[in-house]
Amino acid sequence: MKVQQISVFLENKSGRLSMLTKVLRQEKINIRALSIADTTDFGILRLIVDQPDAAYLMLKRSGFTVSHTAVIAVEIPDHPGGLAEILDILAGAEINIEYCYALPQKSNDKALVIFRVERLDEAIRVLLEKGVGVLKEDSVYGI
Amino acid sequence: MIWNRPMETLSRNELAALQLQRLKAVVERVYHNVPAYREKMQAADLTPRDVRSLEDLRRLPFTVKQDLRDHYPYGLFAAPMREIVRVHASSGTTGNPIVVGYTRKDLDTWSELIARTLSCAGADADSVVQVSYGYGLFTGGLGIHYGTEKLGATVVPMSGGNTQRQIKLMQDFGATHLACTPSYALYLAEAIKEMKIPREKLRLKAGIFGAEPWTEEMRRELEYRLQIMAIDIYGLSEVMGPGVASECPVKNGLHIFEDHFIPEIIDPVTEEPLPYGEKGELVFTTITKEGFPVIRYRTRDISVLHGEPCSCGRTHVRMEKVSGRSDDMIIIRGVNVFPSQVESVLLKLGLTEPHYVLVVDRVGTLDTLEVWVEVSEKLFSDEVRNLEKIERKIQRELESLLGITAHVRLVEPKSIERSEGKAKRVIDRRKK
Ligand SMILES: [Zn+2]
Image (cartoon, rainbow over all chains, first blue to last red; front, side, top):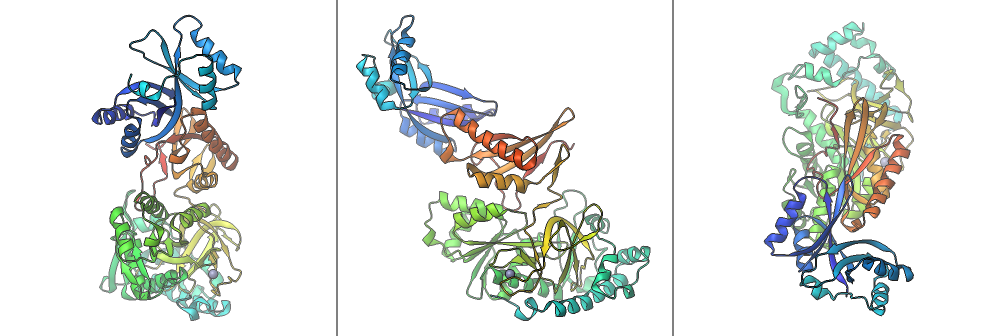
């Protein structure tokens, strides 16, 4: 249920992001989702890819500062208030969300959101108890 | 281990007598052989006969770097070129380079002083000294080289650069002592770690690090990372090159080899000599050099002299680690800032890599200071606020130390240029 996210430290200077995508292309690594958290000086790029271990290794070897983070991919009911339901469940269990971002979904009518939360195992448990779809990692990498 | 026990432990009275005799001789030498010195003394209404006591030294005019440039290349040499067997020179990036010359006796003296320096770091005839200071016109490489031979140790003349090879040969040849700038030593330590070389493969015991000011925190870092004793050495080409002063294992200041140099500390503004214990600019008079003696040479280095006896047995005065060079000093909104102050904050906090650059700029009429620091691999987090917390913490510490606000900017590891010689710590964009 835990999905591996690759986080990369990026200075705000031109060419770094394009360099990074070139490395991934060379290794035939496919990006499933991405988000950038930005400050004036630097950004943190968060990536979900189809081969997280290979991506981690290749980026590190290419001189990027990389770390792994465990996140969860949650299916959100595709109707108004869908996201609110999920947030309610987590808030009820007093689990803080560090950040989240959406993941494109091709074949299914539900929206997918990546969550980085504290107390990951507990988050998975309460979501499953409430019948929320938490995706298995393989299905996320293979989207 | 004391290389020249009779000289290095001379009583203060004997030392003073020796210094006076040598001072008189060198003043005679420059007065008669160097027109520029003679003219300056005449302008001050002085002749060599006016130097009767060590106190009279302070009546002599100062020599500054510009004098050396003005008399490029050989104008201040005090021996005929027939007797000069070696020259060294500065890089000359800002105008004429500075050229210094050595007679055969000068080279002997220099070697002797480096042998003393290496002995301070525990080296002897069984040692293997890897010299990773640059060879060539720079005094570092060749200076240490000949001193190592004088000591009878084995010299590995690596010069700077070629880091992989440095590390391979350091293992293969069993180097026990490393001589380079502290910033290059740090770079070597990183590379050794990256190459995953176990410490047992190295025989390194000590390093003699100089040619740029460095802090106590940097010493701890180098001693920890390389598992060695790190000794600060001091020298500058204008005075001799390395070998002017060296820390002993007590590591409580650098002994200035006073049988060859007379040190003074002056107030850089009033130019008045200051007593021991007070901070100011270091001034040196060489009293044995033949080729290129200097009288009251203003180094621009900021330090303090201490006269109390040292427990190592050496009687020579000690200078504190240079806390900055007035060449490196930047003035931001009227505040003096030394890169070494930033270094000590970064190393004390230990949150980032100890690689940094100060970027000074001017926005409108306001000076700005940015400090670029490398985020460390182990501290990188996927959360912006953790990194921002580190930035703020460094900023707060710098502010309380310097009294001005610096913008701290985290940059990618290894993105700040590594130096094989002296590190470039300041980018001043205010200058055209
Ligand atoms: Zn001592």
